[in-house]
Image (tube, rainbow, N blue to C red; front, side, top):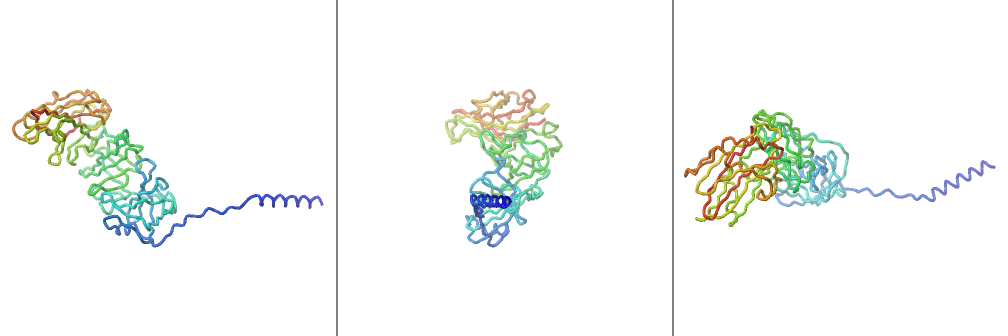
Length: 418
């Protein structure tokens, strides 16, 4: 009888337990329609050259090759299949990571371009993306700069071998002002690609490596310019001797600074200009013939008072032993001498008139071009800057013109080496 009572007690407790614990339905699974499956290359072939709405029920499959975790990408990732790759602009940040194998339903998604780079607009990761697997990493396509195709390889994960940065002593970007940096990566044949880095990247303040080697990242374009975006600083492996045989960090023949203006820009590579004067644009540094830096304050038979600086990036000379500066210069017409300065504490972005301690090197230049009534560059000769060795050295040219006179000055091929 006692056993029966115990059994009834157990049954009563069990029934009470289940009656007090409600059963909830599982949350609904987001059902993303599949429709017709197409390749990324087929999708890009649909692009009309202007904003294109995908009105058919299509899905694309692929693997994510970039992510937002290092700050160099924001609300964007890149996706790749066996046929090609494409940029995805995300409606909101987060949710997709390198190695994610995904499917995207692209019905009612718009396809556009920015600087000829094709992209999908406003992808909603929660509503349009199905994650199939993780850690399905894509092997980068190994290529040379010259072999990269603006159309076929855009947005692709690429590994470039035997390359080096041309601007030594610089950082990847301006981490102080959070400005994007553009640094030139070159091979030993002079072919170049621009490495674009956000000022928000967690490696923006890192100094560019000085050797030669490999770099892995996403190949992008802006019109006809080849560009490259680094995914992870650990994928920059530049630890071999440079193309000229130097170590790049102070070895014999290594250039710490090289600026030839052949890219048609005064400010590429971290250079900056500052101007003040009485007539806008007159006296400002400008590009002449596409590859020479020039300053002049003369226009329509008048001179205008001005002061204009051309300032180099900060250069790391801490490993140098006997560095020197050399450049080409040319002048015509009467006016003040072009001035040359050097600083070891310039902050890299402020007006040099008000920031930094500057030592004038003008009188230490062996050869300034005289006004010989003709045009023709002369070499400055070697200007010893050994006494200024430090981890942050900046040089600057200062042009001055008055309301009564002003020479035209041109400079080119600015090099710090040893």
